Length: 236
Image 1 (cartoon, rainbow, N blue to C red):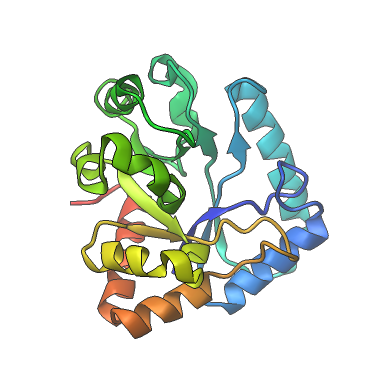
Image 2: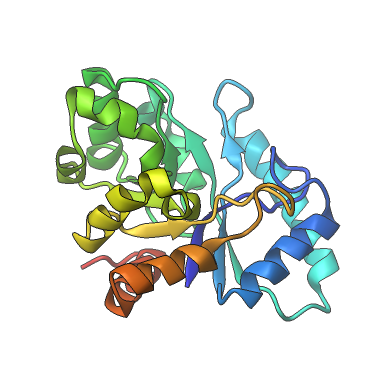
């Protein structure tokens, strides 16, 4: 299984605080059956430019890799970012550099408020003008706002990909809604959104067990296949 949302790079954002903690997070993920993990450190356009972010990200990755040279029981690491939505982002040519691996897919954190028509137009421009397919991060966090001006069906009609956090399945208050969307194939990817080894540990195995019990192994397999097609940049 692939973890599409994780903050394990050491000292990069509000995630892992050290190389030691990063290694613990990676080992725990591997022991849960995660063979591939996407590094999605936060990117905020009002904090730094893309080149600065990439330079900083590469330095943290090299620091981590140096300590991983003799360690085999960790998932394959694929680089990406969790990009906070900002106005005019579809005009930024360098934005493609924040996509996952060498794909056209980018994890996008949307505003935690009602989305305006301009917000939706920005998503459309990302796809049509920039050739970037947004993976909407932790879709469950926007449920309080989605009903005001659009629903999940309308969002999917734009051609975006939806990701949910494991916590949404573990949390009883959202479990039913998420399972319903997963069963209908309207949520495509899973992520732990892990940040540390304390209150936000890797937990994707718990979500997988719930999906398998409530929906069936076919749903787990579909999510896994979708993720692997995305990494291969093929969702035909």
